[in-house]
Image (cartoon, rainbow, N blue to C red; front, top):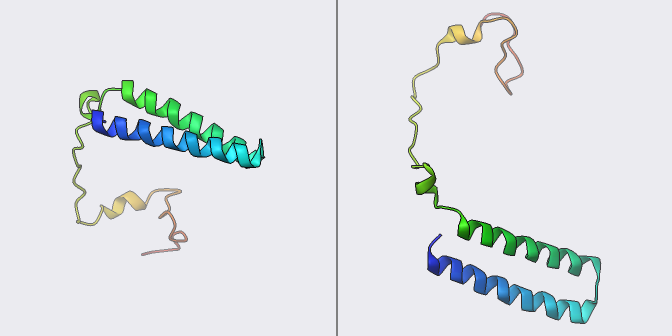
Length: 95
């Protein structure tokens, strides 16, 4: 994440923290306010973790796409024992 993105994220988390503080003043320690505060803490932890992590390109993820051919699969792959087409209701007899 770029420095600008991280600064924007931290600024937004700070603004959210002010909003949750206002809600706490109005609603007290209502369960929903506690959950929002917990979610905000989690966002802050995740943002700090992300800031210290190397970008995906450095970790080895290149975003390379793996081509999937349009040609039909070899029919013999689906003729084995206990082979089923997922989500198609099963094979019954010859195709």
